[in-house]
Image (cartoon, rainbow, N blue to C red; front, side):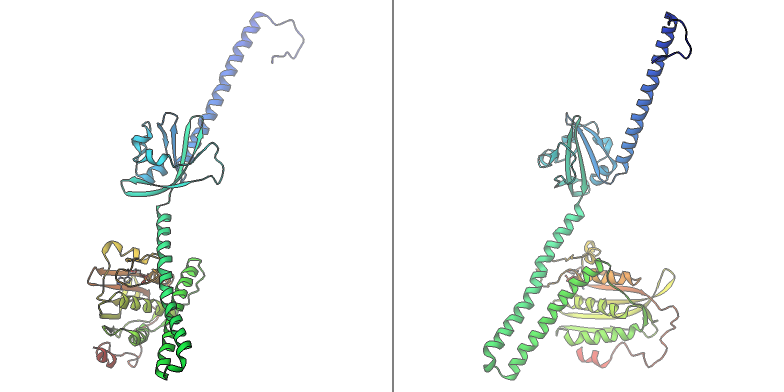
Length: 408
Ligand code: ADP
């Protein structure tokens, strides 16, 4: 709109030219501003797509890839340079077969269906959860890497199968023994009755242990486990744990203690350390189905400049292949979920051990050669003020003690 601030004659041709020129310039300025705004908007959209953790794939109406963000590159190992501008079916192996099962909607509603599909990458098979939204320019797909989630689900399924088996076996024994006692009470002599009652007690204890293991794993995950920290004598602990384990050890197993005298006190939760050692010894026994020697001992250590104490449990059992050694500390992970060697378990024991040890400021690891045995080691901080063992009364010989001799 053009207006005059003071009265005057009608506008002439010259003024019209000036106004037209002004209008054109204003038009160009507005266009530029709009363009600038759009470019800015696109640049921030591109920045978002660069930093977003979800993978984004844009396929135009001709089936050609127009956008492939860094998250998509990370998940699949396919670089944008190799894919953008090429037909999607050529660039992504297996896309043609997979694409049919991917749900594509016409609006990006929250909670729309996603599907899990496998894709082949240079790093092996990966599972992605993907969905698509169609728009006038093509289809935009968003996907996430769910390989680990899927893996955990598989482990959980295995866990449910093994845990039910683990629970069913002692339950059947308790039930059978109780039934026998009920039916044949009068026909059983005292020794017979005692045998069944002991069996009920032992198997109920086993049931209790499995249930406790499941509960503790849950509490650890929820961060609801309180750990104390008091200096204690690790030699005395190892002695007690080994003595207790000897009572239940099967005939083919010999338990040895290796405790030097000059080990400092440990600063940690004694009861939890005991629990970890008991678990490691139980495993050593369980995974030595052909019997053998198990050594439980201690060494002084040095971890990042501070004094530490290293507990170890060494067996001559089945051993663990190199590539599995880190995984056995994962929740539910078992080397042999099908129990081909007939050794059962929930796969929670070592997960619990490593969680407890980490929370006590220590760490746990395994050294093993498949077929030759394993050594589990756990390193904990030493009590800073504790000198070497204060009294010789506490120091007992680690070899040749009567109990050892008896079992050899
Ligand atoms: P589980 O209840 O199966 O024993 P763990 O968490 O204690 O669960 O152990 C996980 C897996 O690690 C076991 O299933 C077994 O395959 C392996 N493992 C643990 N300890 C030993 C050992 N001393 N020797 C060989 N394999 C072991």
